[in-house]
Length: 247
Image (cartoon, rainbow, N blue to C red; front, side, top):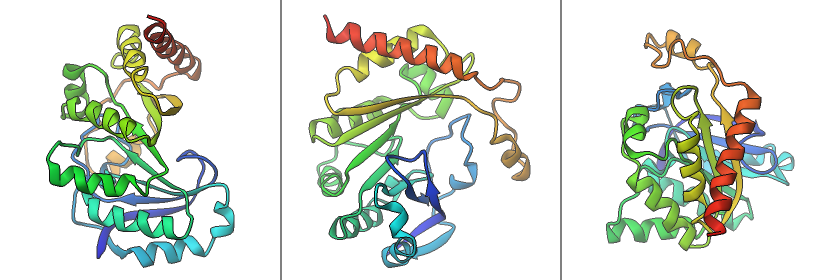
């Protein structure tokens, strides 16, 4: 089996615990307005690689990853669920820590799909779940996709006992909103296996890539978020969590 891979990164430091070997999958149904990898959106293009090809690259530097492992991101890795599962199962055989960076957008409750998902989760050590927006209407504006299945995915994974690392990007005028941040915290409080919370400041480093691709940048004119504002936003999320847990 071969997967469509956009690129590989040999020294990821923000993609899970430790130093990570990062596999960027090609294809994504989300159209996040602040996405800095729009070149990963189109499916079924890019480099075709086997699991063996990827692990061969990993093993050339495996000593660097003894406190890390492999992270699959994108794009959306779960668009290539069978290939992703094969990769993670081979990683498990070699005692390589596996991290899945996903939006959860492909989740649905079809029994055949859930059977496949359970097989993937059996070889997944950590899920980095990107929750783009807690409000369903605003989520669709921001990403062109609904968020109901994303939240159900979070609950499903949590019920399976898989560790979760929540990520949320704070964008001025969009997600920099105390009501939404508080509601996000209340939702996170329903999950029992959250191991970390990253509240990240929006940046504009993707603008140059859009220009190179001949694409309009959707958030033109919105400034980057100051780190202190991201810290303040995280405090609001934590308050929502605390209040929910003390009711």
